[in-house]
Length: 234
Image 1 (cartoon, rainbow, N blue to C red):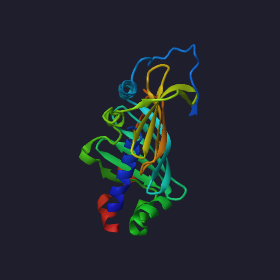
Image 2: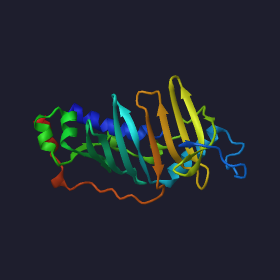
Image 3: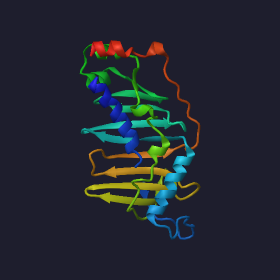
């Protein structure tokens, strides 16, 4: 089903796009762990620390095709992940990726908006849709989520706070798009928040619970719609 493939792509894009407060300067007496370091080097350290943590949680809002969706994911070190996404307008869904497969279970409004209603929506009511991950790779692989490949040509601005934690603020501008990265100034230099503006998919995501275990289990076969029946009902 084309709609189903698009759905999985949106979920993966929302997860991947997340990685690519209240403004206030640090007090004069505070030691800056990044003193004398370029913005690109700070981003490099944040990328490594966040990847090395393995597991984490992310929460925020992403805009896709004019619709704003709330997202909340817990990501395991293996790259397996689980969470929710959606809005009051388009419906909400649970998303789970385990091993080579991803699963989605949405409410009635979600399936009606993504499948156009009909037989497929009825088959999926209260059950999971199963799809193979592209290339058999984990959807939320931390190595991909926190890749340093595109964290270049950054500039550091005034420090800020994210949930009460002090953060270095790094900004990247590309055309009309501006992405701002908030990196922890205390403890390990994890990414705490990312804000994207002016792009086709703007959004804000915060990160927490780095290194805390996340348990992801695939749903039982009895809770999953047979792909053959789903294809026949679409």
